[in-house]
Image 1: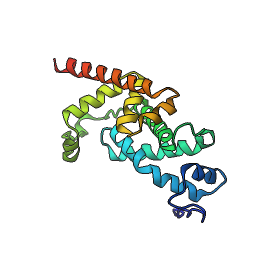
Image 2: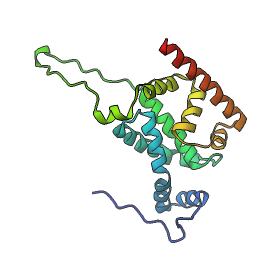
Image 3: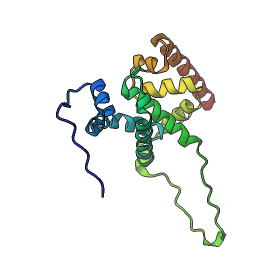
Length: 195
């Protein structure tokens, strides 16, 4: 049986700021945790949905794993960046770990028992994933780590440049330079692919 979510304590309202919610959570108010999740869940899920190429099940699984890791690491959260940006970094790392995880290979024991599987893409997925989107996604995932994180945080995670800079411990000018360099590399990779 699933235990119902705890309501936030009376001193927590819709206007309670992030720092107060974090203090309340750290002092044991599980209702504050629920409010934090409600405020950040859709953004984390949306970013992971984009990172996974539109796979809703994988995005949901990775979102759950992101929050599991975040709650374990929350005592070490220093607040240099906003909670949403910190969560995006955890989500991004969770996604990369998923990419690096070895995939099982099914080898059938008897070739005659194999029935053909329809490998046609799902119509819904086809509608949302154009060839350009897939090439661009592949290009982004091939970028060097610092550039890849900056691009995905900015455009797939909708994080402001100032928050990314705070998370990375660098200036906003450095983030903009990373974005410019990434755009150049992506443009070159897409040009080479069309040759």
